[in-house]
Image 1 (tube, one colour):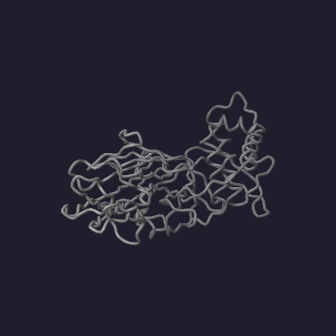
Image 2 (cartoon, rainbow, N blue to C red; image 1 turned 180 degrees about the vertical axis):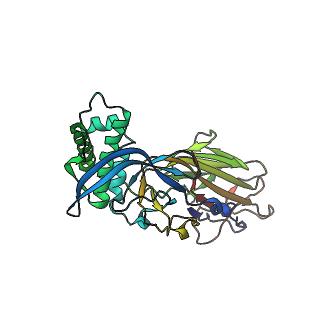
Image 3 (cartoon, rainbow, N blue to C red; image 1 turned 60 degrees about the horizontal axis):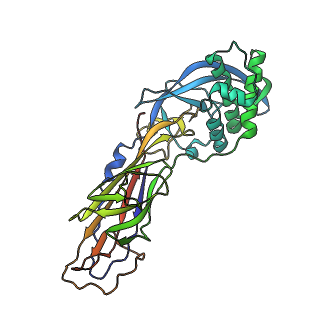
Length: 375
């Protein structure tokens, strides 16, 4: 996914010329392919029984994993499509909530964030108030924690209601544990929004000024975590004059051009987690070559949802160019007040011999893309 942000320029003096900068990373989309992977049963789970559409419905809650094709790490996933079986030969591709057509995903994402494995099996059972037999090992703890979480997911996606004794052929301890986890997650479920939109934006152009050799302030806006910054052609400083190499959402920085430099390129990236709640669909053949999750079409196999974070990278780039007018042109007696024009791109400024720099027009072109990368 590519988000392009064009920041409007500041007003320039009459003698200042605007310099348009073509996006330097326009080919970023070429390697922004949809994440694909293979699904497998990681461990045998428990067979659950309950009510679905007014009838008894028995279904296995096996522990499922998905291994992305660019990684050797298997990520835990849950089924969000109780009525279909898994085609283990199908290729799964990352989709979006809208194309999945699955209801209740805001509640499901809350369940996953607070269920297993994001809460350890033993901790989840303790929070749910379930008694845990001393003889249970990690495998048994995982089975009941996963089954209770999966039942809660199916409650919101498919209307599944487990019976009071939900484990077919299960022990009393298994019945109590699965029921407790299910009740805990369903009764407390809130809503978490679609995690598909990540961005790094730059704010502050409307109000930026030039003072004491610095342009700014500019503000980083992101929901992808800390942003690492580097610059070519100048330096990035904080309000105290310290060098800036990384910022969080809402932090400010200032631009200082190197002596003799006429442009600066600022690079940034955030390493974030492809978050819990991303959906994966058994991709129809025509979807596998897509460069975006939009329009992803699904095959007949179960739809899945990611229950573990997966590391990915979000890069961004801003380019500022500076063009100096003829220094013989007399400067205006007063510096123009920065304001927002209707057209133009670029950064320009007017210099006059022996006088302070007058701020000119500015544009930043930010290209932001999300690229899934193996952890």
